[in-house]
Image (cartoon, rainbow, N blue to C red):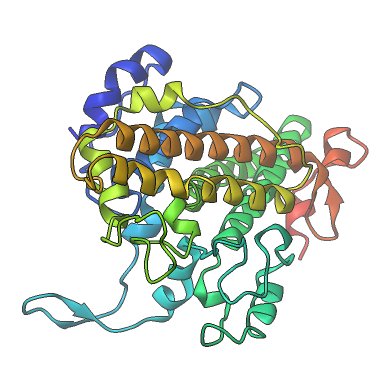
Length: 363
């Protein structure tokens, strides 16, 4: 049983009668332990308005493990050397996906390159790439310098669509008048539920990444070659912060206790919400480095109180934000369209439009 499981089993059993999946926990980005913990705590904290299949013990275990999947699936090339350190060929998969894990913002609140302000992100990843290509320093930029907010938005919009389809299918099952139609809707609902669990799990990784302050800053692994009047460490602290430190020293009961209540952040769209979340994480970058300094330059090697406090805080921030974004996806899903030609989900739920197998499959 993993360290995360040892620390949370009793609490989970009391809170939700969950039996954790006995899967090996390895060190990955935020650490495998951190990603599993954030994803599971978010699902644990969902309100009853979210469909029960998302909140089940099985879903909690599955979504938790899938929270680490975006790291586990890295390095997809064929092995070119198996002697010493393994090396692999560069692949489309890695080149396309790896930049979705981070977003480098400078001390003035500008995305690296100095063209795009964090609080004025373009609507699409394509628009972001177009603007980044106008940057003249350092050395020109593209979306592949990091596009984490767009990975979050992409996953959110997929989940919102998933939920909309699930709602429409649920109405179809209730109103179907023939056994073939009912069989169709039962099968489609089962399939959609599997997709929803997978889509939440995979997307949860990126929401969690954004709660790690070094994932959203130019100071991503030590302060780096920048003005450093406070004398913050230049040691490579990224991996220790999010990996071994979490696995060895963090109590996930304390993380759960620090999760904040739901908030819409005072905005109505995810395009508005994501930059606010990133700015919130970025505001904790100095505390991350200050905690290391105040701990005698421990640099997240041992269980120093200041370091435990900031890591616990950020894990709780990730779990809270993930829970909130799932809630928002559900609440917005009645307002989208499904099928071809397009039909509003709200019209299906109000029975203004009859849901049939042809709604989603009319070609």
